[in-house]
Image 1: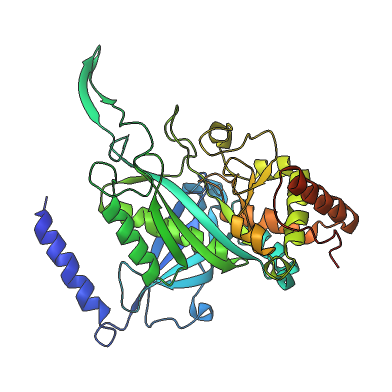
Image 2 (image 1 turned 30 degrees about the horizontal axis):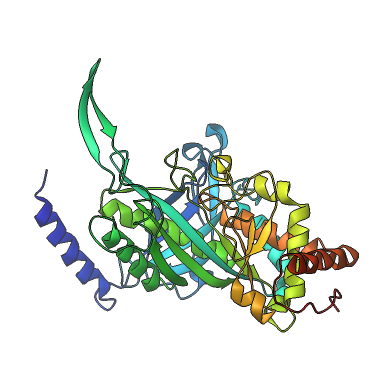
Length: 402
């Protein structure tokens, strides 16, 4: 095997050479799509003669869907249609990351192409101007162990094994600083900078409650762009993790027991929620979501029942609840939103492995499309009754949404 330092130097040299567009006019396009194995991300490179300036410059392409669990072997061609383009932080220069939807040769969206269905919903409710902020939690693993967790070599019957030890109890890891409590910060910083280079709307990062677990936030984004940016940020995260020999887990409960799970809290608002008296529209949305709790839970990620136990800053998966500043509720209204009487709300139910197109599309359908004004009046009255019962200090303004 070649010397690692020599390979690193060669890699740096080649990157510098290809970043000069005048000397290297071709462009490398990394086509990225969602595969057929529980939201896995796939990609491959196309070389073109010049830098594309818009989506219209990007050709359709195809791949072997039988190798991604998306097509049978006797009819395996899947069509890639570019939908978004970003500067490539790994190659620089003229090179791009290209997000794609997936279709059959007959033009039908694949079952794994949730973006197509979400796009249809957002087209219907474009006038609502939905804004989204998504908090992506994840856990870093190396050799099967969360980063920062102790490992012990041991022997058992049949040969050597590796046993996972446990770090100290949760408490010192959230938003921490120090080599004994914050693990993987260099990877986190590299991911943040790579996303910013690509033009993604990354608004923050922080260490999470469990050791080896982190979070970054994407948004505010409008409509379908939220799903696009979360998907591409995940792809960049996995690519950065390769550089550190780290595996990224989006499992909602990566370690059983008295440890926090990983969610993908989804903050959102409509145009009417963001103006004076918007709290009424927030309360109406909460009522609509309560009525469809089971439908939402079914769309919010695999394995979420292991996370949503009513403990570790989660609500019970079986019961809908909401509250002001309550991180143990299904839906949280922030203190500032409550005091101002307008703003946004947070759905805390989605799991870390959720499909962002499924979740944002499902929420938009519920709060923007499935509307019954008579029901909304009841939802608002019920929420304002809750205010009074709990002694909240905001003044109720009447139930009408007019």
